[in-house]
Amino acid sequence: MNNLDDYPYEIRPLTPDEGGGFLISYPDFSICISDGETVEEAIVNGRDALIATITALQLENLPVPAPHSRKNRKAG
Image 1 (tube, rainbow, N blue to C red):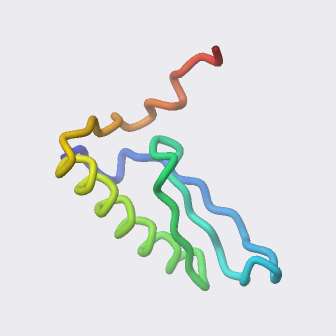
Image 2: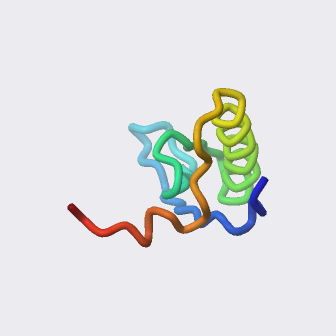
Protein backbone atom coordinates (compact mmCIF):
# COMPACT_ATOMS: atom_id res chain seq x y z
CA MET A 1 0.00 0.00 0.00
CA ASN A 2 1.21 3.49 -0.78
CA ASN A 3 2.18 5.75 2.10
CA LEU A 4 -1.14 7.27 3.14
CA ASP A 5 0.57 10.54 4.07
CA ASP A 6 1.48 11.01 0.39
CA TYR A 7 -2.16 11.44 -0.61
CA PRO A 8 -3.21 15.11 -0.63
CA TYR A 9 -6.49 16.08 0.94
CA GLU A 10 -8.75 19.11 1.00
CA ILE A 11 -10.74 20.31 3.98
CA ARG A 12 -13.59 22.77 3.89
CA PRO A 13 -16.03 23.95 6.53
CA LEU A 14 -19.56 22.66 6.25
CA THR A 15 -22.40 25.17 6.45
CA PRO A 16 -24.97 24.87 9.22
CA ASP A 17 -27.42 23.55 6.58
CA GLU A 18 -24.90 20.80 5.79
CA GLY A 19 -24.62 19.90 9.47
CA GLY A 20 -21.60 21.98 10.45
CA GLY A 21 -18.10 20.70 11.08
CA PHE A 22 -15.58 20.02 8.36
CA LEU A 23 -15.54 17.90 5.19
CA ILE A 24 -12.38 16.14 4.06
CA SER A 25 -11.90 14.78 0.56
CA TYR A 26 -9.03 13.18 -1.32
CA PRO A 27 -8.60 14.45 -4.89
CA ASP A 28 -7.04 11.17 -6.01
CA PHE A 29 -10.24 9.31 -5.01
CA SER A 30 -13.55 10.79 -6.14
CA ILE A 31 -15.37 8.35 -3.82
CA CYS A 32 -13.41 9.07 -0.63
CA ILE A 33 -14.89 11.70 1.69
CA SER A 34 -15.51 12.01 5.41
CA ASP A 35 -16.19 14.68 7.99
CA GLY A 36 -15.69 15.65 11.59
CA GLU A 37 -16.72 18.25 14.13
CA THR A 38 -13.16 19.66 14.12
CA VAL A 39 -10.40 19.75 11.51
CA GLU A 40 -8.45 17.23 13.56
CA GLU A 41 -11.42 14.85 13.75
CA ALA A 42 -12.03 15.22 10.02
CA ILE A 43 -8.39 14.25 9.34
CA VAL A 44 -8.63 11.14 11.56
CA ASN A 45 -11.96 10.13 10.00
CA GLY A 46 -10.62 10.89 6.53
CA ARG A 47 -7.63 8.64 7.06
CA ASP A 48 -9.98 5.82 8.10
CA ALA A 49 -12.06 6.45 4.97
CA LEU A 50 -8.91 6.44 2.82
CA ILE A 51 -7.81 3.09 4.25
CA ALA A 52 -11.29 1.66 3.65
CA THR A 53 -11.37 3.00 0.08
CA ILE A 54 -7.96 1.57 -0.82
CA THR A 55 -8.84 -1.77 0.78
CA ALA A 56 -12.14 -1.95 -1.13
CA LEU A 57 -10.40 -1.19 -4.43
CA GLN A 58 -7.79 -3.88 -3.75
CA LEU A 59 -10.43 -6.46 -2.81
CA GLU A 60 -12.20 -5.81 -6.11
CA ASN A 61 -8.89 -6.01 -8.00
CA LEU A 62 -9.33 -2.41 -9.14
CA PRO A 63 -6.41 -0.03 -9.61
CA VAL A 64 -5.40 2.16 -6.68
CA PRO A 65 -4.49 5.66 -7.87
CA ALA A 66 -0.99 6.87 -7.10
CA PRO A 67 -0.71 9.94 -4.87
CA HIS A 68 -1.20 13.18 -6.83
CA SER A 69 -2.49 11.27 -9.87
CA ARG A 70 -5.39 13.67 -10.49
CA LYS A 71 -3.19 16.75 -10.16
CA ASN A 72 -1.16 15.57 -13.13
CA ARG A 73 -4.16 14.89 -15.40
CA LYS A 74 -4.82 17.27 -18.24
CA ALA A 75 -8.36 18.41 -18.94
CA GLY A 76 -9.72 16.66 -21.98
